[in-house]
Image 1 (tube, rainbow, N blue to C red):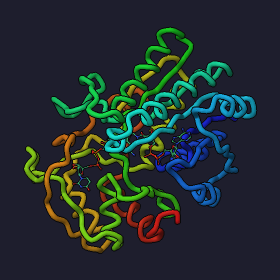
Image 2 (cartoon, helix red, strand yellow):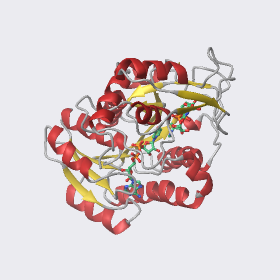
Image 3 (cartoon, rainbow, N blue to C red):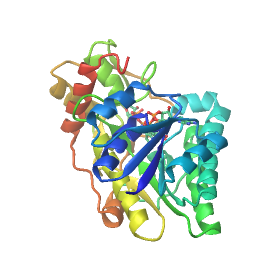
Image 4 (spheres, helix red, strand yellow):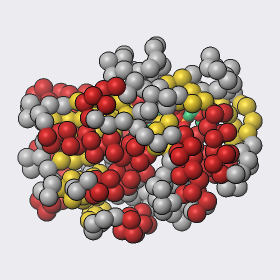
Length: 337
Ligand code: NAD
Ligand code: WQD
């Protein structure tokens, strides 16, 4: 059985990917330091998983700890999710972001190299496209960073490209996620942001469940059909399957790749609010406020490469994203607490 090391394993996207990998027949070993997640995730995963939950608490920046984990489990590949992800926080704490996101990646790759494990799937982001000049976004569109978080994703991709040039035995997959939303259909795991949610769907979910009074819609004067921002929301379950497909490709064929994981379909803030109201049966009051600095008007993927290279495409629609988010939110109004 092929063993896969999952870093940031207790986090939102990794926890869903953990189940998808196990269902696809991989042995999964999770690593996390819980800097942005709860150990309760592991208990929930144990209920849902088709195989045992194997887990090591460690910081991916700790070389000795990573060596021990590689010695013990001898993974054939790493799926590297561990990182900080709050754009605003990255502006006020750039050093913490560079250390954790880039130091963590470099340390993970060094441990991999010492142990002859040369396949890595990396969590990149549509943020690497900066302000899109043309839509939909293909992987060869210009890239840029507008904040330190985005810079860590751009540089993370660069590190892996340089590594592949220097040592062609490496196989790397950079997956550029668009806007991951939704939750596992069981309602037992999902996104549980600490403090005020930065992202739209978790905020809407907390308004619907009564934890927050109303949504602030950041601007309705963009050049979009209803004036609010348009994004490519993708169900986290589809995203998880994208990782399985990327891993399979690295294991089955030589070479490296960079692909978008999105649906190819854009929805506005107000489209999402209406879909959430329909799915939850609750109302989501909102007010229009000023634009959020750094936001782009519209962003959606050209998902062709993922279909051609990975044989993967998103299946679940906006209604399912909202229904599954709502199931998670109303069954766990305070998240994992
Ligand atoms: P998350 O915060 O829920 O998960 C990240 C996990 O990594 C957390 O469990 C955290 O405790 C862990 N972690 C962080 N630093 C660590 C370290 N040094 N050692 C060990 N564990 C560490 O975030 P997520 O939304 O699941 O995102 C996962 C990955 O996907 C991140 O790399 C993120 O940048 C990327 N990404 C996320 C989105 C999004 O909108 N959620 C979009 C694009 C890319
Ligand atoms: C979506 C839309 C907002 C909150 C961010 C990161 C990106 C990636 C995904 C990691 C926009 C509007 C939001 C709110 C609102 N993460 N909005 N009120 O900005 O596309 O991407 O998460 O890689 O790097 O930048 O996602 O969910 O924050 O916003 O009106 O309270 O919702 O203006 O139009 P975004 P988001």
